[in-house]
Image (cartoon, rainbow, N blue to C red; front, side, top):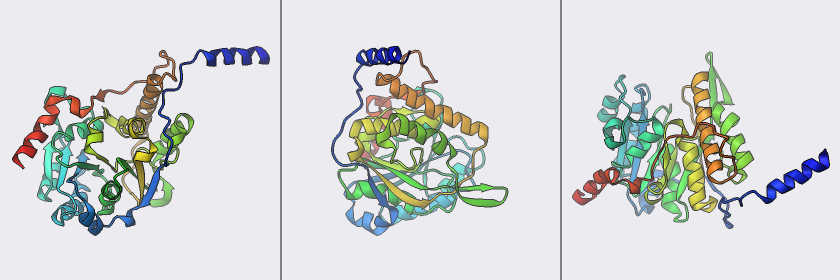
Length: 322
């Protein structure tokens, strides 16, 4: 039995298609600490325009604390544009953000020809139609004790190193429960789903500490070449597709110390885990490493931004009038 099984496996391997994943020799993933990129350094060294985007949904309790530091960076000349993309919040999120000095857009009004907005990833994709910067930074709107390190940290490698095209933030995630806080334990989908999947199927990316972090930044010309998964699938989809595009040598991660936010209930975590699994299996299938009949909820995706004429129209108008 053992010998027959081994021969059968060898025969199967001979008929498997070659692994099409990129083989990119050269430097590995660059890692930094946010303290290397103070606002003063970014202001002095930047040569490109910068937009910061905050996707929001019902975040009235935290959005002022996020917008405030970002608007201060804009006023200091560190970034050029601070944009909040709001998902029709009924708690006053948009009004608070606008009152704090941010440029606010309703997600449903952006690239409307694509129909109803399908979650966070779709909002981020649509945001590219109104973000004018050469460098684009995304940060989450539900972070408590937010300060400039979240934006400066992930923008720093892009500003200071032309070899870097995409940056992820990472941090320690405390877990808050019944009035007490444990120093670790947050980020449950990351630790139980995303990182094990990467370790198993994309071991080159196992050094990415927070693959699902909402704090990220990239060069516009890269982001416009990449399809965006919608909903919870956006972060892992971008990570895998950008890795395929630029390799580890074009990526970096930055330690942002600590991030605290409210924890999601179990049913929401289950949906996030399913989205992550769906993206990974869809990429494995695309690469010929998973049978076609092994389907696990492939995500809805928006096409690369530069292929959509309507999505580009607003930004081109802004640049002509600027």
